[in-house]
Image (tube, rainbow, N blue to C red; front, top):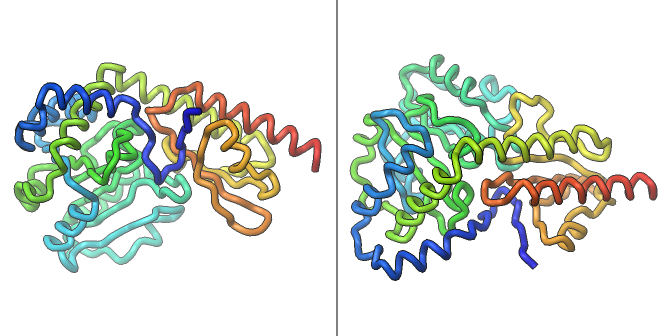
Length: 311
């Protein structure tokens, strides 16, 4: 049985990865330098991400490597806004004109609370003297166009592209690129750089617009279910802040959703809030089809009907 992993914090399986690796080994692609592979990958990445001129692309070994470099550069002038939630701007740490850079997590992986581009643009206007560094994991590459709302954006490739490992894709303007330098020592492996280019090419061939449409369809499908069934309560009430790519709800503990899902080959993130209430989180990956989500909706529909009849 194929297991579909829909947990937001674990990689979604991209079935094209093994195919591309076998083809690369036969063609001796890994004899090329990292810089050569990155140059080959960049045009398709720019097309997929709708990048404007002036932005550079880097594929870095890990989020830890990038954040360590940013801490070195900005030191005490870096303010971090992590795990966004309602009233996030009012509850944020003190930011002054001396703040050099603001690091923001666009999507809260524990709730599915998502900051729309309009909010980030507004904050950038509020703080014109600060550089904006946005962790866009579970936002890019499909939730919204890569608008010029940040000086640096990055996302995890295991979650965005379904790859293994810890590599991240970084998009930066010229100011950030100058501060970071070449980052040659922090670049991802030849294999990761090659795969990033090939998977972005796959996505472009499938049609980025069509993939975004599929993600929106699956998101609407799940939120409609959670809003229509009294057993479920969406974790994010305000639709404006709901992520299309991390979908969360609460569910009665007595439904034992996780055990039942395993029987149909689907895994989701499942945790206990208290003895009566559990939390579920679902990653809306482009690597899993609409049919998988329709199967998931049918399952939830059947289980809630059974639950109502027996409680």
